[in-house]
Length: 483
Image (cartoon, rainbow, N blue to C red):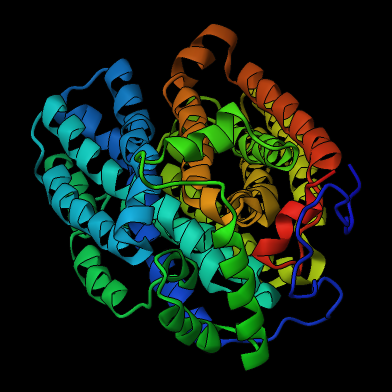
């Protein structure tokens, strides 16, 4: 596959809006920025609830007497439970609208967070984890679609990267919460860690109501005047808004999908009988989402305290949780770097650098954890974890969701995003629910060498299969993948 612009010779429609791949510095649209920020803030609670378990497991284990197996299932179950809403999110986003589905996500989060804080048994915690996970699944799928659809091409990667940036902010806040409340009594500290997450969903639900609906969803419902009103405010110029609207209308008119059969035609177009370009797109979406999680990110997010304690010799909870805070700060900083530069440098160079860095840092962590004992070994292991977080966050973290959402055709985008996210969460569940058992079977260094091999394979996949999408309109993507 060529990795620059491709002009289709198989009948694919030529885009009305010229590619801006070489247009230079992205223009700034404050309205689109505000919309993407509000939508992305709904994912803070996903990051918070996911990573909070890394510290609370130290206290829940002692307070409720849970076993290693129960902790492993409780930590990783978020990904299994999320599948229910992830697979339903495409239908919900097309039926209720992108904004309506985000409100629904916040309702589940408002119910689940206090239930988690008040849980007094393993089964109660699992039930609460299920409720919050359903809200997280809706928010992560629909936010990626909404941000891609609300953004002008000149800053689409920047705004789409907000998804991972706010998840990373949630991770960092959870690590800070772990550290801040670690000194409280065991039965109280972990409950307060979860309890402080009760208020944000209430405020976010109100904020989401102030957002406009996606112009592409409005056009799919025949509300062209409303769609144009949003496009005028989220485009660089009124002329661009009109051209974007015409491209959207053209995409909507294509006889790919019918709503009369409950969406079965969508799955036919996506899975059973995809066109050549859709097949290439599907390989990229499934591949990048699989490799992102198979590289071992959730092993670090959920179990870095266990790694620091068992293999690096840290005995103090404060020291262990302090190291996780450092990892969260590094992750947040490098996501910001990716967010600021992805529209200038492009997706492909950042993904290649990121996957190569992930492989190298995982191999380094495998080597350093083999050398157990001593302050030098401990420092080298922590530095390897920080290097992994930096490498992951410069490309793999923020750009996997961005790339998946932007390359899908309009009529397949919501369900395609659901499929990609389902693969992502299933792989995450496999990693997070097997890490302790896998480390017992093949040692922690063996796990890290395995993840390093996955990272190297991911780098080869990006190089061979994923073309550059910088500056292209969403309706231009099928032309890019036509060969």
